[in-house]
Amino acid sequence: ASYLAFVGEQGNSHVLKRCHRLVERQAALLAAGDAVVGSIPGDAAIAAMEEVGLKLNRGLLRDAPAWLTHYVAHCALYMKREVAKLPRHILTDHRRTIEREMAKSKGGWKPPPFGLGDAEIEAMAVRENRLQSMAICLSRVRYMLGRGPEKLPFAAAPPPMRPLGEREVAEKMFGAHRDSMTSALLQAMAPHARHGDDAVRHAKFASELERVGQTIVSPTQNDSPTSLKDGLIWLRDQLAAMPVTPGARHDVAAELVHLHAATRRYWAVAKDEHHGGFTADEIPVRENEVNSYGIGAEGASEQIVKQVKPEYKAGTAGGALLVWYKQEMSDPLQWVNSNRRGSVALPDLTCAYSPRPEVAVTKAGAREREAWLAHLTVHPEDPWPQNTGPWGPANAQKLVGSPILDAFVAAHAEGWGTTYGGGDESEDEGRRPRVDPDVLTWLLDRKHYRS
Image 1 (cartoon, rainbow, N blue to C red):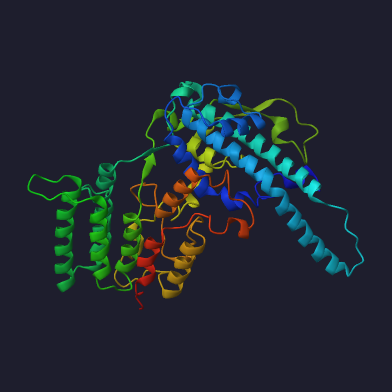
Image 2 (image 1 turned 90 degrees about the vertical axis):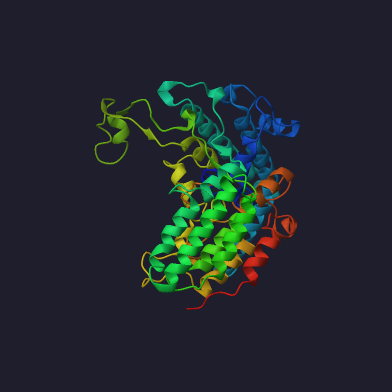
C-alpha cells in the first residue's frame, strides 16, 4: 500500500478514534487556555514537538501565545502516541483483510508479505500527513488571529474560549433577562399551562422560580444565598414532579437540568477582536486554476478571471484548531457545532416542549431514552445521536460544558491521549474517561413517562 492511500481523515485513524476525538481535543484546548501567560510546555512535550520539527518561538510558533503553544504541544504528544500504537492496529486490520480475501479466493490468491515493519512505515506516513495538516492549520490560525489585513499582534491573542465564574453562569441560567435558561423554559412551558389548574400551577412555579433565581444571582440582605448547584437541583426536582403530557415533557427537561447541576465548569466563546469575523485579502483566481482539467483545460491561460474575498466567521480560528488534522474543511466551525451535542454542550431545555399542546414531542419514547442512557454509559465521548431524544441545537446561552467534558478535562490532566490511551480494548479497559456514576444513577433510577 502506498502513502497516498492513507492520506486524509479516514486513513488509519484507529488511534485518533480512540483517544483524540472532538471531546478530547476540546478538553485539550480548554486546558491550554488555563496556561499561565509566558509559560512553556514540559520537557516531554517540547521533545515531542521537536521530533516533528515544531520548535518553541520559531517558524510557525514564532510569537505564539502560551495557550496555543501548549495546545500544539499536546497534539505533538498525541502524534508520538499514535505512531507508537498505530502499527499494531494496521497489522491487525491487514490480517483481517487477508483472511477475507483468502476465503473469497478459496486459497487461490497468495498475499504479498506484510509484517510489523511495513505497518510501522505506514504509521510514519500517517504522522507525516498529521504534521503537514498541523503546519497548514497553524499558518491559517496565525492569519485569522491577526485578522488578515488588519495584522493584529499575534502574541496578544487570547484563547478561543474563556472560563466562566459561578456568578456569570448563574446570570445566564437564572437571570431575569429574556435570554436566560429559566426565562426560555417558562416561555416554552406557557402554551401548555393556559387554562384552569395548569395555569395556576404554572404561575406559582414561575413566581417561586423567580424568587430562587434572585437568591442565586443577586441575593439581598434578607435573602439566604443559594448556590448555583442547589438552585439547579431544586429546579430539577420541581420539573421531575410535574405531571407530564405528550407535548410538555417536564421529565426530559428535568434530566437536562440534572446534567447541568452535575457540570463543574463552563466556558463561553471569547469576545475578542482576534476571534472576530473579518474579510480576508483578495485572492486572484486565474483561468488555468478554474479550468485545470476537462474541456478547455489545455487552452486556459494565466489571465486573472476573478477576485475572491473570503469571509471568516467569528470563532473560526478555534474551530480550525479543533479539526487541525483535516484541513480540507471550508467551515470547521460548522462541523464542530454539529458534532458536540451533549458531549461538549448540552441541548436547550426548550427541546422538551412542543409549540402547541396538541403536538407531541417527537423522539421522546422509552426506546429512545434507553438508547440515550446506553450511549451515556458506553460511548459518552460521542455526540448524542439524533434518534436518542428530542435534542435540538446547543443551549441558547451558548454555554460550553457538561459532565462528559468535565471527565475528559480531568483525564487530559492525567495524560489520556498522550501517555496512555489509543491501544486495543483490553489495554485501555478501566482507564477510559467515564461519566461520574453518581450522575448516571439518578437518571437510571427514574421511571420513564409512558404516553
